[in-house]
Image: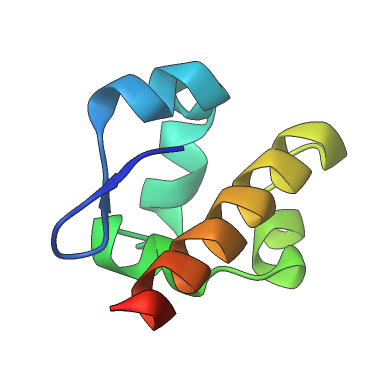
Length: 71
């Protein structure tokens, strides 16, 4: 997953992860680009993101945090 400045996920990455399927779920809970790196398994379950997709999202969030810590 490729994060771009200001903790935003690129449009291409959203499609690679299949996030476009769940856009309504994220909007309903007011999850925005800046809040995506803060998501946890609990929040993903609350917005009805299936296990596999949720694992992909959490893995990329973890990679983002590692990348941020290197700066």
